[in-house]
Image (tube, rainbow, N blue to C red):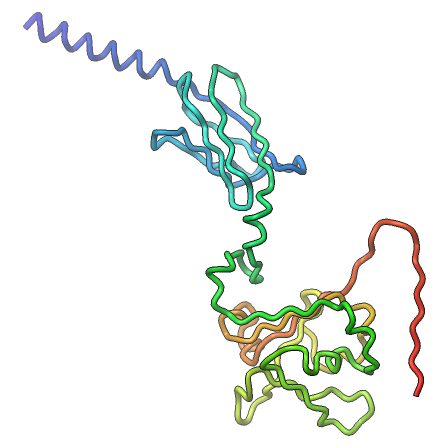
Length: 243
């Protein structure tokens, strides 16, 4: 009976030593721009012990001396930090350029290019503003496969008929949704948009790509991004067409 009591005390003492060896450490995770990174994963290598950073990039984890913390987040290079008894740990995550090139923003989430099944075409305005057209949608003629643009309106500056991958409806409107800088507009609005102000076009051709826009995107979506100001010297340009 005495031996059992001694063994019990021994195991309790060992458990206390193991508990005492683990230290609760706090830290902060920031990006290369100095902004905190919420949702980053902090894992003690070789164990199942881990946590994630909060909205301010702070985290708390139990770790022993000599163990290594592994900090990772999508789009950043994974960092390993050895714990040598520090009171607090500050982790700087650098951008993973190779990984960022493989990420596509779909409007409601981010996905790798290899996982994207939707048909997305992007046209950057490098020479489109050199085309003498009265409307920005006329500049897309012949630029994107699967997009048919026909001038069916006899009025000057009238909106053309645009179909993406054929007609999607027999009786309803078959035109795609038009989104300018995140705002859904009608096709007539494009008659008020200057081609020199357009930075790029993106055409979403299938239902999966246009899911965020609901029924309005059932016939495809044309996303238009306009140019924004840039730092530097003031520049003036003038373009004119005669005929």
